[in-house]
Image (cartoon, rainbow over all chains, first blue to last red; front, side, top):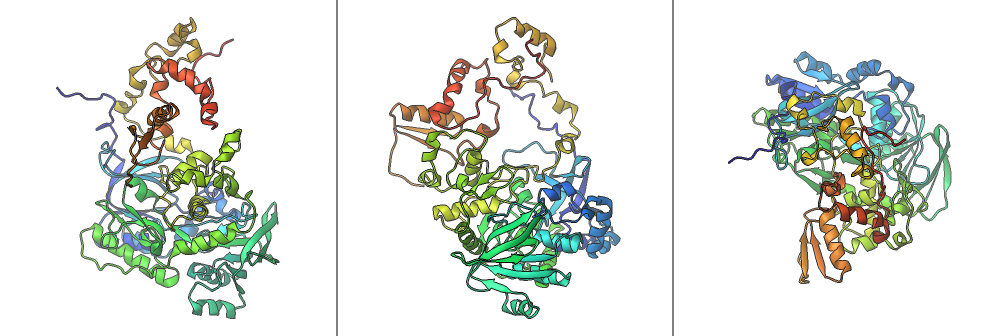
Amino acid sequence: MTLVDPHALNGKLPRPERTVEVLVIGAGPAGTAAAIAAARLGAQVLLVDENPVSAGLMGLDTPLYFGGRMTSAVQRQSRMIEQVFAANPDLETAMELGVEIALGTYAWGAFVNGPGVGTLPEPVVGLADEERAWLVGFKSLILATGARDIALSFPGWDQPGVMGANGLAALLDRYDAFAGRRIVILGSGDLALDTARRALARGLDVVAIIEALDTIQGAPDRAKDLQNQGVEILTGQVIHRALGGLDGVEKVEIGPVSGPTRTLDCDTVCQAIGLAPAIELLNILGGSLTMDPGRGGHVPVLVDTVKTSLVHVYVSGDSAGLAGCGEAGVARAAAQGEAAARAALGEAYDPVAPAPAVDAIAYQLAWTRALMSVGSDEIMVCQCEEVTRGDLLGVQPPRYLDRPERMAARDLNSLTADGPANQDQIKRLTRACMGACQARRCREQVALILTAATQAPAGSIPLAGFRAPVRPLPLKVLADWNEAAEMGAGWDVWFGIPEQWIPYRDIGTEREAMHIAILGGDMHL
Amino acid sequence: MTSSKGASVVIVGGGVTGLSAGWQLARAGCDVVVVDKGVVGYEASSRNGGGASHYHSPLFAEEQRLWPQMDELLGYPTEYRRERSSWRSPRPS
């Protein structure tokens, strides 16, 4: 006898609207090169990019840490589509080769059958724009989703004008909509030096580059070049405080950890301490990840430089492991994109040498430790959920709840006596990283603070998992997708218990019959 | 992880059911080890309305007795509310 669960979804999910041969997510250097290479090999290609993102998402620092420093130009998305298209001349090449390009389109999830998922008619990516969400099937998927900014907290960081290096690069070069003038840059690695170069090229003032360590971290010739242009690079110093008004940052106090400090006038603090490869979609797909500080942190396990642990899923560019800054980084990302396209289509390709390894986590930890030495426990780490440094180190419940006496006895060290800190567990206990920005401003720094506070080995805190949707989209967009009738038929009640909607207090009273009558007897939703 | 320390009871699964059983045993003086493949309370226990909390469940009466005590027993604010939201039900007049 075969028992079939009538509510099981197997075979009931509708097929996606369409299936493409090669689906590329991300139209940066890697994704654009992948799309062009795949089209040249004769493949049908859909290239998806979320830029221009809505002004609302930008305000949530999604997908990059924009820090509220965009001009009002970003409010006009139709105009911004032209701007984003023009900012990447290779998109025109791709279009001429027949690549279908979907700008302003978010990839909020990606799913293949595997352990725990057997219901999909084919591998799919979940897409959305401002109006609706839909699924697209794929034969091959190339993830070229880039990297996110890593944010660290310091007094006054939770105001407009504090932003990330990739957010600034996007506002300068992709959107042409940066609202700042005078920038202080945190960090002196190649990312920071490249950020300074980019800002100077746009005629902006780079007030200073601040380095917590005692030496400049980036390429000496590039640092020298900036210094020759009048940029001050201050080593052994950190930001003590950002001060400002309603429009955000107006000045910063900087100096050695132990003081004294001096004040610099600026309207923007750009955090260029690190980037995190954007691995959300691969994590949701179930692809293997590993912690590799030399490649930027949590990164895909790579096979032959562009293949993932999942058949038909490929990665390239920063999302495969940081490709490096400047022209060399762009060239490497493009070569990876082309290799990914060739691999996806079964063609021979030359493996691409990775960028020179830099221990990103050790550097981020050094900055974290320095910043934890200035400011108090009252500094907000998770801005969305208002979790302070003290709340995090004390593993305290969210502020809207009472804090029982017994909670004071608990802290990170009593918790980690049983084993290494797990960020997902800390999230459940404190709400850190649970907010609307989907932890874009605090995911990495919570891991770094947990590492520093528990003296755990660098990189040992497990990755806090991602869940779809990986963009904070309105429910009206996500909810509105076509559910097959066979699926709807399963929406009756749990375990076939028809009375579950009756409030406890009415059970066993005459009101119970009234509920049943109102709900129509079968309780079907 | 290896450990030479034994236990009278080993509980496999650190969700709400396994943890509750382990907590009750430990409170009664029994030495217990709870093992989980991942993080405690991470999977269905972090997102499930709770089949056991339904009044058709044989555990319903006990669950109703324990819930209001949870904050005090655990020393942690569980955000328990007696009235969960009701669905399309009339408000008492």
